[in-house]
Length: 111
Image 1 (cartoon, rainbow, N blue to C red):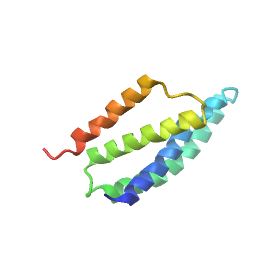
Image 2 (cartoon, rainbow, N blue to C red):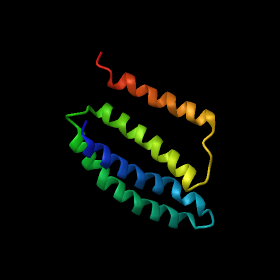
Image 3 (cartoon, helix red, strand yellow):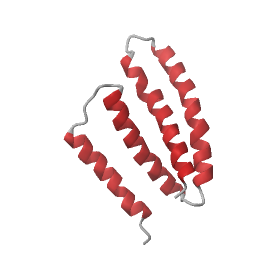
Image 4 (cartoon, helix red, strand yellow):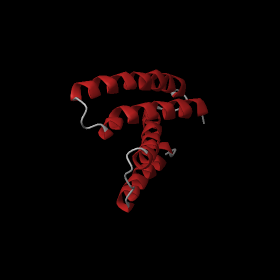
């Protein structure tokens, strides 16, 4: 497995999670400011996402890259939600996430 792709996708997802959800702690901030700051953070997401997909494509199909990205997104989001937003992970969230991760089997299985 190409670890460089995995590492770049993980860094990318950290930036994107911060861009998409980091502002939730600052609900008093003006929306236009939040949007601009989120876009600036998302720029760095692209700086890692695009190379990750370029490097990984060939070893992985586009569908496999997307699946890897989604699993990483779930993991990063769970950590972010608990650590930064101080929201608990309820059992039903974990079951739902596990089902999504279970889909990886079907994407990567050689049929």
